[in-house]
Length: 280
Image 1: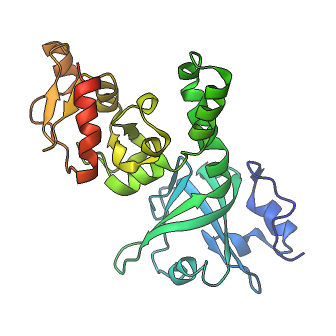
Image 2 (image 1 turned 90 degrees about the vertical axis):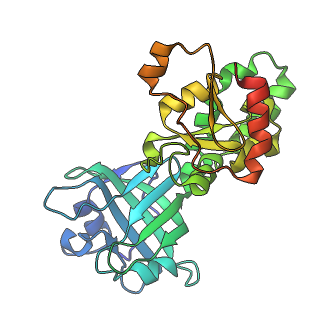
């Protein structure tokens, strides 16, 4: 049977022996690599393991939201084909697992959104997971803000939900804009939160989706910023609320030395709002 994905279901688990048999290979060793390009097909198949065996190369591969962050093979043998997939009308499919020696979860088709080719280190790629983008992230956003809808009439609730479902790209774009924590520079984006500067409830639909209305923050700073205990001037320096006790400042590691790593001109109107309307 030629390699195809018609009988596979998004979100279901499959191991390599099953897939090898399904696709007509004599052994699963034929698909044992991280990148598989079946002969005479337009498919690129990624088998990605987040937590790898210690004896293997420790590529930094992970899913964050609706995005796959993936490092290419050290020999760069697949870099060109991955980059040129869209031009060549190839489809890239993803099988992903959290840890080795477990089945892979099928995530379906993924699309390359960004990449950095390197010669002396693994190239870096960012993919958009199509099914996650349209389903999981969007409904997570709705659930997280469900309490904000209760005071609205039914028509307003429906309009807000539609808006919320449409902003699945907000976090991705804030990550692309900042690249790491807006204050500390921490690069582990799985540990960071994309925080609206002008609160979501006070923003129009365009502002809700605008990455310049966002900061990428570690959870403690996200909490303090969201509650108005800290804010930032247009030069990036911090303002700390008098309501935050000296003990709390010590626990949260907050002092006057905190500084945004950068302030984009487009951030300033949102920072103005945060200082005047959110900061206490």
